[in-house]
Image 1 (spheres, rainbow, N blue to C red):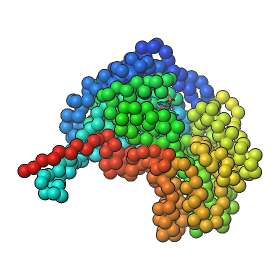
Image 2 (image 1 turned 135 degrees about the horizontal axis):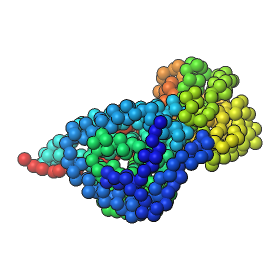
Image 3 (image 1 turned 60 degrees about the vertical axis):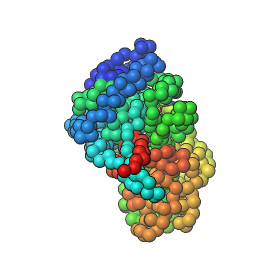
Image 4 (image 1 turned 30 degrees about the vertical axis):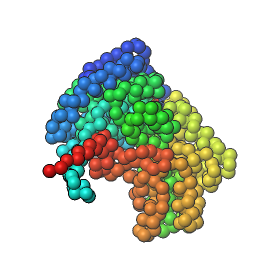
Length: 482
Ligand code: NAP
């Protein structure tokens, strides 16, 4: 079992554990029971200043550390995460509620960012060329940006942090991580693991707060901070972009999604259902890439609807830490209320519930796997992230119609397409406005591929060959003649 007390022992600043200067604490709640699991410090702006001070003091030594050495430390982080996979997965399940099997997958995915970026750290190259005029040479050097503020959400407490920390450290930057208030324990447990792997004091700092707006504004106002990397909702992303604009800080934004899942008549039905279960039910639907709208062509609509309802209703709902659980609780009671509101609105507008459809009673924050047919295109759930185990189905007739309706959203993160016709699959993938397309697959996330969105889903990419690390480096051009 994870040592929750140790994970909650303080703010992690300059390689040490500190209480908040306010003495105040934030409660971390177990979503399976509603009970308080632990308390973590509620940082003040003075604590935030101490983080910037520590990250800034460590910056020059870390950027000068040989890439091979940085790579070895990152690789050690990967190894330790895999060694502690069960402990970390249990901690994630306890504070986030997700099923243990999802938590184990998350730890493996999160660790991969260290392995991938350990490999990236020793592949940072520059450019050398001749000016078209022939008068001089052009040298381009890639340098670490410096001190970075990283802000992460609760739905992947490990992976959203390592997807930023690993490339930042590989590039030679130092960081301050502000994890979500609902899931800080994983961030602190990982900080202790980085220290054990050899990450020097001040290179990674972790701060928790109940007032993220004022605290992060204070950090961004410090001229030593040069980068903001945020994962979370589009609404908070917009606020942070405005705050960063005041200081002209480079921003990477991984924001909300509203993924379409398009199934054509010629799709392999079983494969489409398998993919739908992954795309919808990984993390009980609490994923930015979660299928939010199922567009199913008329000829396969009824078979797909019944197949999905039968698989969804068979899922075992329960506490995340129970090994047989397949769908854990939602993160908060408020999240359950939001899902309930979206489902009720669709029901009132004529949608039919094939399974689920009502919040479960009890102390935990549970919502059952739900499938709905006949959902109107202008239902609220067609335009908002459901962020829960609810699959609404929409019928379509033609390829052009499917593309138009898939694109009828301000978001553009992920999309899923199922067809046996490869040419059509590629045509539709090209027509859908999204940063990532899963063609005949239910999962897109891969540390080796560029993750990110278009439209209101974000700016920049994480992971991928050089994309993720490039977000933490700046090009320096040197003109020279010889
Ligand atoms: P959120 O409410 O936007 O919070 C994300 C983080 O921002 C948390 O650490 C939060 O701190 C902090 N925050 C909140 N208000 C802030 C402010 N005014 N200034 C600075 N920081 C602030 O999102 P969430 O509910 O945690 O996560 C779910 C959202 O994240 C969904 O929209 C999902 O699609 C998105 N997401 C996107 C990706 C992607 O890669 N594109 C991945 C995962 C999740 P507190 O916890 O203290 O409020």
